[in-house]
Image 1 (cartoon, helix red, strand yellow):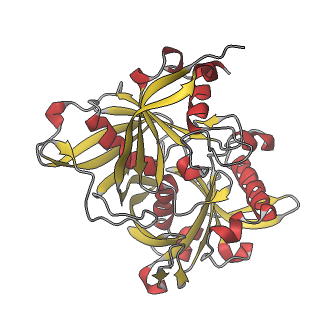
Image 2: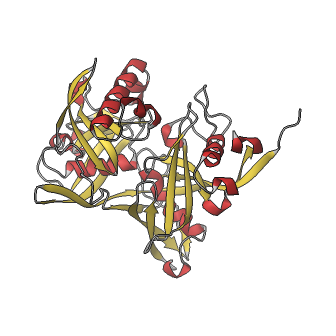
Image 3: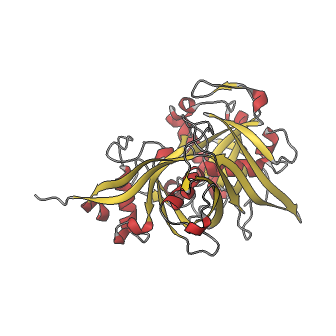
Amino acid sequence: MSYKPQMAVTATYMRGGTSKGVFFRLSDLPESAQTPGQARDSLLLRVIGSPDPYGKQTDGMGGATSSTSKTVILSKSNQDDHDVDYLFGQVSIDKPFVDWSGNCGNLTAAVGSFAITNGLVDAKRIPNNGFCVVRIWQANINKTIIAHVPIIDGKVQETGDFELDGVTFPAAEIKVEFVDPVDGDEAMFPTGNLVDDLHVPNIGEFQATMIKAGIPTIFLDAEALGYTGTELQEVINGDDMVLNRFETIRAYGGLKMGLFKHIDEAANCQHTPKIAFVAKPADYVTSSGKMVKAQSIDLAVRALSMGKLHHAMMGTAAVAIGTAAAIPGTLVNLAAGGGQLDSVTFGHPSGTLKVGAQTQLNCGVWTVNKVSMSRSARTLMKGEVYIPKGALFQ
């Protein structure tokens, strides 16, 4: 029996924030994968090494976690006043699908750097020294994101002394701004309430803040779930019953938010909504052994991504946290002490993160103009990624 040989696809492996993924220029993909559909999804699944029933992604570029099972496709923007179109694909580890329903805020930090280095930003807009303002069109959610990328001698500066909890080594700081993260024609709070009673059959009833900002997110009170808000990954991820409980709550929350028409749809939309729990500040030790003192944070947050407790915090969920914290009366705001807050520093399993939000109340309706935070990014490898030719059509 003869088998088709492998094919090479130009790609870059990058870390962005506390995530990493495989980046492609749209024009470098095989022609059949340059448009959405089965060929594209099959290619990305094979690149990452999914679906893998062993959960290791050994035969691909994935790292067997939601933070490292990611792909990005970039092209010159078709939108006015934007430089680059950014499409994000969250690849399932053990199932044969790619979730295109949301953005990755962490990898956004690497989009600007990639766009500059790969000729997707007009050379006239790149200073010899200073910061290049890269205008990103996030094509999954139709939103504008601004990345301030440091430039030295006309080239992207990736090294530096900015430390980001959840990332081992320092790098150059990149300020990322999420502009108007909620559509003007949709409600930030889809139920109309800052806090809802969420009934979950066979599990219970919980108070929840359900918000669409950055990414649809369901926030619960840690104490109501039996937690302190200082838990690390092993406490949650090592218990299948606990994970199933969170997944069921997430599914019913998504249904109440109008993200699903039927509860069964949640299984095929693992990327959205996110589910998180919040608590008042408390001392805790991070996954790296660092002590976080209660007085150094405004609140504690733990969030799940793709069915597992995240090792740090998703960038899009940080947008939701910053927005909800700025609005008096949400569970996030109450955990942070209440009142109107322009910024908060929250604790997560790997450390802390500061996020700021510009919100306002108009005629009884809350809106958010911008959410900002600092991340970092670094190119890890550039060249070609190989997959069997037949995988493109499986």
